[in-house]
Image (cartoon, rainbow, N blue to C red; front, top):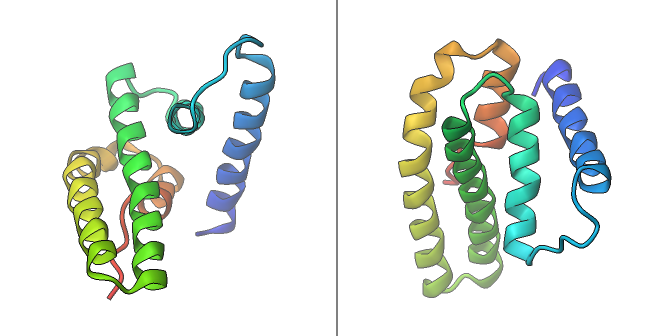
Length: 127
C-alpha cells in the first residue's frame, strides 16, 4: 500500500483502541467472534464515514470474510490436508460473494479508500 494508505490504516487501528476504551460501556464484554465484528465495525465507520449504515454493515461482512480466508489459507499451508484445503475454498467462495457487491461501489471512493479496500478487504487468491 502507499504510505498515505498505510497511514490511514494505522489511524483506523488507533481509532479502534480509543473506541474500545472510551465508547463502549465498561460492562460490555463480547465473545471472540463478536469482539472481532465490533472492531471491524469501528474500523469501517472510521474509514467510510459517509456510507449508509446498511452498506457499512455489508462491508464489515466483507472484512470478516477476508480475515476468515486468511486464517483458512494459513491453516491449509500449515496442515496440507484435504480438510484444510476444502475449508479455504469454502471461505474464499463466501468472501467472493460478499465482496462482489462492494467492488461495484468502489468507484465512488477516494483513491486511498479504494487502495485500502483492495489490500485489506478483498480476498487475494494464492496460487
